[in-house]
Length: 363
Length: 104
Image 1 (cartoon, rainbow over the protein chains, first blue to last red):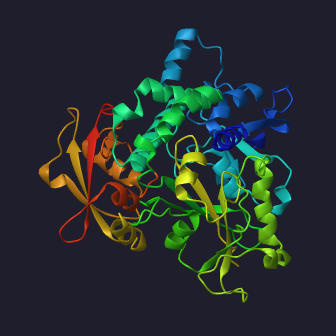
Image 2 (image 1 turned 90 degrees about the vertical axis):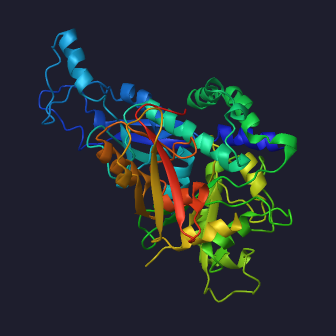
Image 3 (image 1 turned 30 degrees about the vertical axis):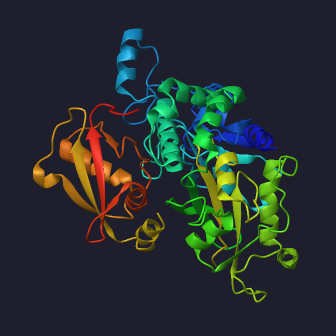
């Protein structure tokens, strides 16, 4: 069954509608071609993938010349330069970088697509519609995003995160155990070219421990998301990472609920129903809907009573505690899910388990 | 482990003593520049930029324990994982830098 979960998570896709930014691609007087900003590129992007994976396809779809020479003032220079001149120019100019934006929020290129989707969408209006993302070709927001020039940056970043996750899981950084660089690159190319077998061969090895012991620690990234009012855009307000074991001092497994009570304190109740242990491949075959169900619960107050609500021992009906949703890989896992299981089976390709905590909206 | 997780996160304005060591033949820093106190909510990127200025290098590889941390991780998060607690109860985070990639 666990293998089925992993395969399912791998095949999960986010429907995305990419549109070219109008501000970046103004209509040229001389242009007789149809405006590129009028068209939309629809793609089913794997949840585990990263946005720059789509750059090449988008550049060809929108006929963006990735090595287009842009003058210092932003003007387009004639492309009738000799090949040698062109080459010299290209060397000086960085290759064009596509970056992505959703409702004014630059999307981090180093965060998996599924995580961004779960963290930033969630408005009830978005249900069943592709996620509309704006593609930019200019004015890379250096403050909001980490420096990026080519896919190599993403590969380096990804492999570093992978190593870090292995360090957290194993407690040591034994590079021999991790496998040589070629092995890790096989995992990377499995991710890049959507080849499950290549990915899984390596990943299985990374997820295993000597003697089938548990991991030393739970490798996680926790994103707090919140929005202003009931209609404002969701934003990631905080990213939390800290050492956290998968078992307590007596060897008892720690669960998602233990993690949340330490990190968030007891001031919250969770929409994740504890009575139903339905994290299996059959129940979440439509991953995106799983996430959207959470939004329904958030917005529909009449659903509140039906929920099995986690409280710190006391029965709480007064609504003093704020209700939050916890999302991993697009689903709301039961709070009694052991962290070891989450780490081994619900992690993203970088071997981190990305957990999203959707905080109640602030007025 | 349990005693390491709370102090850093719960006090975002505590300071972490970050130390720099040259690796793989990178130029040495002056003795006085090898240590810096950084507020734990600062991003790792800020420390890298500081180091880039000190060394006047555009390309710089900075490592902790042979790992190159994410630039958007905060110093506090990194100290919680990789730092040492000193006798005074403060955190110390040793970094290595090089001008060529030293570890994968």
